[in-house]
Image (tube, rainbow, N blue to C red):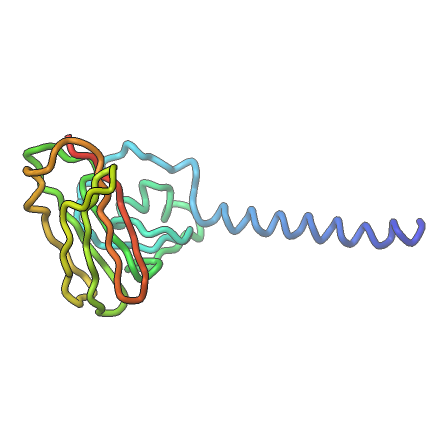
Length: 168
């Protein structure tokens, strides 16, 4: 064996071990064979769960529906992953339904909520109280025309989140 071949072998083995280690840790987090996007979640309350994959889920049922908590070694924590989340439910809302907007943050800071249509027109803008969890129903929903909208929230630190939803 020449010197180059002696150097190549350890690097190839290291690359294989790194690949196997990464794929093993991802396999323990989410079980892709347990994903069930059409399975119903009877609990519609917003109780955020930070999944082992770094995504925030609406509650434990939504996390399990995405394949979490069924795989060996799967873990989650209660609360948001980023410390700043916006939840809009449901994402497709009819005229006679309620649209619930929930804002969760790690620190109590004032935030601004905006509702914008697909063309950038601002329909609603209001300041939200400095609370860790704030939930409200959009009373102005019946006055909005049909189409796509963006619910946007931002705070004084420059953090922002947005969620798209459709009014039928």
